[in-house]
Length: 216
Ligand code: G3P
Image (cartoon, rainbow, N blue to C red):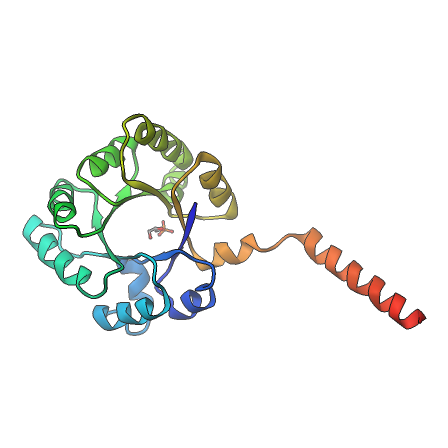
């Protein structure tokens, strides 16, 4: 399973550049960053740190607007993936863009049927928002599980990105179900390194070693 970082924060991308396979941004994440409104300049900064896929979302919602914006965004760097919302106009645009060889990530997917339509249109990635489903009392991971099963049976080529990650258990579940990609916010990735027994074990090893060295 590939790990993407779900952020537009340059410091976080830099500190995890050794580990991650790509980055996903969205308008909310970019709006939080200083200079994030200068899209081209900001994305170039990210591409200087990461060779893997970097998702950047369109703002236009109508077919022609999406197509023009997607072509412009994808020309910024060869590793740009254009994020397109799961709407009828967005899916129509995805179909044309995929024929043009532009990589797409259909976003705001909340059901296996939406994921299937995006895959039929030739999306490179489909992003399922598990946290937002959990937030309203649905089982986000069930959508991931069912979508993966459908994609396997129907031989869909799109890769499933598990997005809207809230905690490390989401990541573990995504890997267990065989998701292609998980996109993780930096704070959740930080938490994945931790276990109290690791800290206790390390302290014990170091204390034992100090005692043995002092006894010499
Ligand atoms: O990048 C899309 C997605 O991961 C957003 O997550 O936390 O805003 O639901 P969240």
